[in-house]
Image (cartoon, rainbow, N blue to C red; front, side):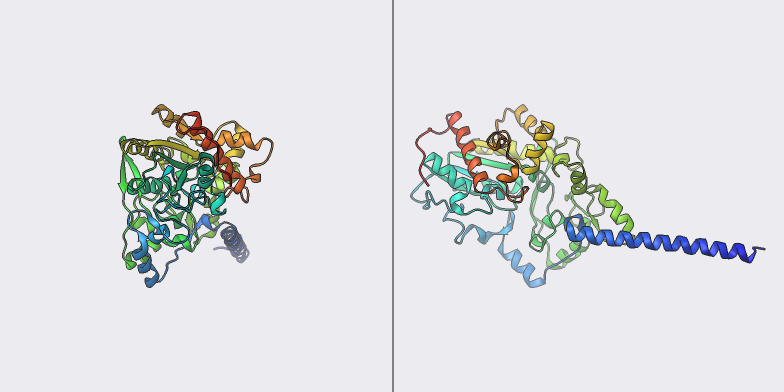
Length: 394
């Protein structure tokens, strides 16, 4: 028979263990709440819009590209052909475009006015119109699809600008899983996957409202081609749930946390050829197929890569670009690439990337976009694609 003392000792030990577990779970809960407040993208929190807002989104979105709404191509921010307004040549009907640009916010030139957008700055250098079809939030895939759809684009030279972080966007279909925000809750998009040596197009999801709500609570059930699914262990994105201590420990697998701890661009691993997302190969084939499509339309294609601030810092520290495998694979295909990285570093000299990039790791400022325009102009003139005439004045 167990003695009362031994019984009490066992109870005390059990109580101490339960208290320790409770305290550990409390630490986990507090840690998760703090991380979620500082970096909400680490966790997936189901959040839906109302039925009326969702049905309005379905009616207004681009039926092929998804966000943004089709109406974005009109209004004061865009001209009659859907380009961002080009102050140097504001009327597309009177000034034929020599060059057209496709890409994301780094092409659209977010955070500066129309005059300082690098498409307009390039137009000033060329003395000819440059149509800017960049759209904030796009992946390389959407930019490519917009080019394919824009049959009225008659510019003889066409740029597809790949922003380094877009490798991650290229393997997702729901922006909310990659970038938690109210606006991204309706950020659905198509994407491409690779089948052998060919791209296959996965169309834009067309959910009913009830399906949208159900998918919000269980994304894996309806997004079979999404890399950033919560709780599947690949990207490290998790829902906030009990036991919170395990949720907290699980953040160490998160792409953004790992890259932060290693002082690397968050997209660096996505350029590994063996990465489970297959992002490098998908991006490579999108750019490859763009070149073929542009040539088939009688255009001169220009593939570029725009680095972010982390890429520039990483090169200074390691002497290598995070996206080097993509450069190598495109080179093996015989595709010339305008990599803006070396030219930006040359112009920076000893200065920090923060001198030309807002908040160090966001969009370029006016000087940064002007550098992109200058580098693009030098690339075009060096290859004899445009005449190096006297540039226009601002």
